[in-house]
Image 1 (tube, rainbow, N blue to C red):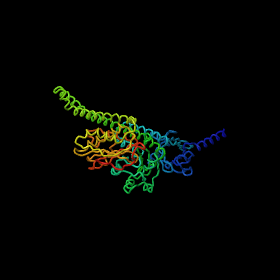
Image 2: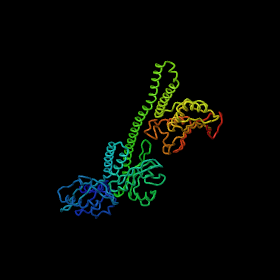
Image 3: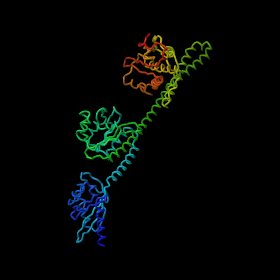
Image 4: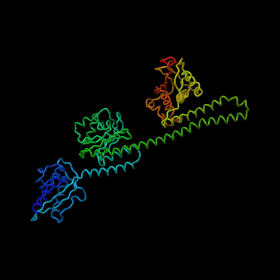
Length: 553
């Protein structure tokens, strides 16, 4: 019997020694007398380092007094065993100073003659606790982002604020794609750095130089830097002003997460630990990546909503302008037909014939304007649907197309002098005759619209680089470099209140020329007039290959 008991005690001693849980025995003075292998793994101390030390060695300083009192109360009470920290997890501290959460029970073992020891069995649940906290945080973030206004700027602000609720002391939101990167939003855990926040928000960075988010942006991968040294901070500064801002933020540890949606890089989120002295871990990085995905989707939703609103607004503007533009030629047609009918009834056939050609010309011009407008709208609809423009390619005389464009558009000139250069012989070109006439119609129509009465618009052409390059030049007020950068954008107008067009003509012109494998560009400046040049390929061997000037009449 004694041998069996001895063997059982040996097995029990071995079990205590190798248990994955920490088993710590303390005496009635709360000094450690036993410290198993599980305790060594969890706390980072060896048994030799802890035996004889007070239990407070393993507790955060702020909890030591409370725990000593509670353990003493348990020792003096009648309970034989109980859970420690029933309302919340127990906090422990490892050898390196890192705190962690644990579940623990304490038991009282008597040794006879009123003597006892206390055995504490402790399990590290920090990973489980962090995982649960991360899940709760991400659920909270998802709910807030899904209920946030679809305003893009407010979404950016909400993302940054969410990061500082749990993950970071500072959160910086970078938007753009190298080489253009800007800090667009900054948030701090407490609103105590307003000047630093204001200085950093909108800060423009040179993406070719080092900066906090560079590795994240260029690699499109999460980045974890557990420890930031002063030397590292200096290497990330692009200027003395930038370095001063970094010193004010004072990062001790940081994480970077790219904002990527559908393969497109929107920017990056930077999570920075400073005054809290938090050291980021791979688990923190996992949480930040999940938040980055939620943020990317929220920003994309806000962007799509914004685009949809802009599209609706553009549609409404187009409808109002189309209604305006169609009303004018329709009114002209109705007026002239009523006039013709009245004249025919009052004066008979001779009265009608007297102005017949002039009235027909007005009807024709009005119908031409309506036809051009509806064709432009149909072309844009095709391009938006991903379809190519319908083209009927053939071999044509460049001179004949130039002359036909001039003759067709001359009646529209009114008080503006429309002129045709003496271009001389030009080679044959490969193209769609009707589409090229449409290009001239749009370009000349624009030129006439912006050229003051008494001034001139001219058409010309030359051979250059294996192509025929046509020109439409006006002597109007010219356009600025800023306006010139947007000329070929769909629905774009220098003056949104100008109801003389809907901003489609130049967009379609560019699409037509590109469909011809040609190119188009514009030269202009305030007070210098505007000249559009567009080129289409020549038919090989059909005529002269180079004339570097335009002959004017």
